Image (cartoon, rainbow, N blue to C red; front, side):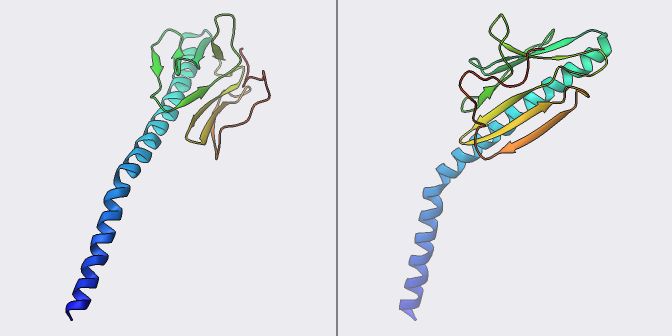
Length: 155
């Protein structure tokens, strides 16, 4: 019986050691995934806010995307800075170097998309040009772009 207890003991030690060794990695992966979900939800919230503001104010409202700063801004509101480890790709840049999606007073839009990517995964938040409705599309890896091509439209 002592050999059996010893074997169980070593199996438990090996399993515990494996769990402890993988713990920091699992934490890091979980943290990046949480940041990515938060970033995705932040982009969606900005787009919904802009559509609602355009309807309530009766005038167009732009959502600006600054890829370099990983930020999204609703015109007349505040910037939403996305966390480290998350990349952002938006519509074609306008004169000030930022891409924009415009919502009209009737709730429609010029359309476009914003891609949030992290660790080989991506979520594309697409704005329908006719209805102004949002749709999320998950991808296994960031969407490839032809050289010089941009996402969506600036207006």
